[in-house]
Image (tube, rainbow, N blue to C red):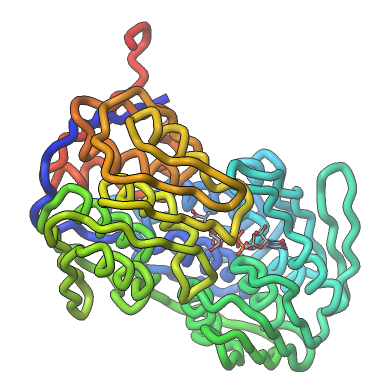
Length: 426
Ligand code: EPZ
């Protein structure tokens, strides 16, 4: 398994480019199931989860060209024939977001078999709300041998109020509703930009959707959808991770090709910490504003402070003067990075869903273990300011959602390299 070797101490200087959003690309690729025409998606990030989605769609009979080289960051998908509408466990177990094919499959073919995603490091992450919504739209869903089997003649519009705000639940059911008979009214929807991005693609494919990006979405079902070409949003979590990298190293970093409007909660919080932020149209400049000050966060659904930025922010909080209270309201076990940060010299205690960070604590290099995508990013940020050389193991977690992270960081002055598993060498 690959490792990262990071020597701390360099301020990050220059321009770093943000890739397309993994969490937009995944539902948009699944949306191609809804039509027999070709769907072309631009600005696709070259990350492991996208390759997993390609394998998943191809395993069902889709033709998927995932652009490397000539067609960098683009994919052409045609689901003319879905010969095997099954999301197999071997693939689903590596990526929970595979459940995003459930709604499109049952809407397009009337049948779907999707392996139940197991839990994951950050929480149980059930998909009961996806199931309840499809049943409300007339699907019959049974569970056997670890698989969900969904059947229907044709989905019917319904009035669905989400018990909890769920991003992929909103996306899954939104896709299903586009081909349902009649009108579907969704309330208590997720308002994340990834939902809005998906809706933009669906509308380009001929869907009739109003209200995406708000908590109430209305869909008039249509008989068929056609192909479309769509450009994926910039990745707001990658952009946020780079903003914190610039702040924590006391650098002067221009985060380019991003959408500042998607980062308001983080920008507001970084300014409270004393970080200097200059917002442009598609870029943000982040500079040190002197000593960092502690500022509490509480993760909320969008447009609140994103749970996917909590671990990265906690690394910054270890360098802020004072006590930072971090409350994680979305997932029940999203503090896996705390123990590793403490092994680097941080002073963090956890009580239920609240972590208390005492800063400022100098961080020392250590051998640390990555546990999930965003916790891994938090450890990279800590290593960028730690004294000495930190070894991060299991960086495949990062490869799932960050494109060429070490190259991008090296390009702005970080001392970071990837160390493959050389046989017999540590
Ligand atoms: C999406 O996950 C993202 N993944 C996650 O990003 C992100 O952390 C999360 O939204 C919250 O913003 C993708 O978009 C692929 P949820 P999702 O359904 O949709 C509970 C990353 O780092 N819930 O919004 O799976 C659930 O347990 C990943 O890129 C139910 O109870 O999250 C959680 O407590 C990590 N029943 C809460 O809702 C359901 O049927 C929010 O989960 C669905 C969800």
